[in-house]
Length: 307
Ligand SMILES: C[S@@+](CC[C@H](N)C(=O)[O-])C[C@H]1O[C@@H](n2cnc3c(N)ncnc32)[C@H](O)[C@@H]1O
Image 1: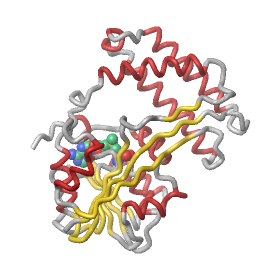
Image 2: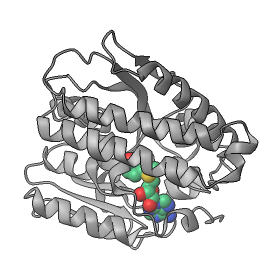
Image 3: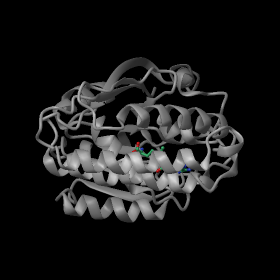
């Protein structure tokens, strides 16, 4: 079994990446639909694989009554951070996160009613081995799901009529930078299994013996003036979300492969400055009802029954 992807994740501590992006997918007003697609009942004992800080784990916990949810991850930083969030949100009786290697789970066979994950199986160097472990710990007649986001799906970006000054240039640079990023960040650098790319997961589920397989596509979206989101969350997205983009750009700026592929130090400098201008603009205009730029992404959930 190829476990090389573990070395990428074992010390991961990029908390904000998950805390900003995942609440856009797992929205509280969509819980009934997600429970239906994952086939979760409120009394079930659920396992959430590769849960990182546990955004999905907590989302599930909030919908359970006598049921419980256990998240697992290979990074001890995520486990500690995630358990603190569970405590902060008053979910300790229903949820916990444990340190586990998904290639070799310490759980007994056939103990969980439902096993789910988002964007976990796809990062593994051996997708089938990871899936088989999740199936092993699921009860006979229980359900196993994977929720995935794929680059194969188009992202929808609407820049809006009232952007801050510099928005057009910002978007031009983002597009250029992302093109270079995808050229130099390949699945082999990330040690991902390339045979079972995420669009083939339904077939992988069938091959691993799951039956009654369903596919449910869904979308996520965000706009800074959307009244669905609380002011606190918007501020967090502006400061930590955009702040994280800036942090990543500062790290990438040190990588000579960007300049070799046409994205130069001056481009990084300008892009970072523009992100900072955008942060200022947004923080000063949270309630102006004019920032109608928004973006959306597509994802899907595949679910199958064991036995
Ligand atoms: C792309 S992140 C997705 C995190 C989370 N499910 C979410 O969507 O917010 C992949 C996660 O899988 C975890 N992971 C990778 N390999 C693992 C392994 N062998 N066992 C357990 N967790 C693993 C990583 O630490 C990381 O938290």
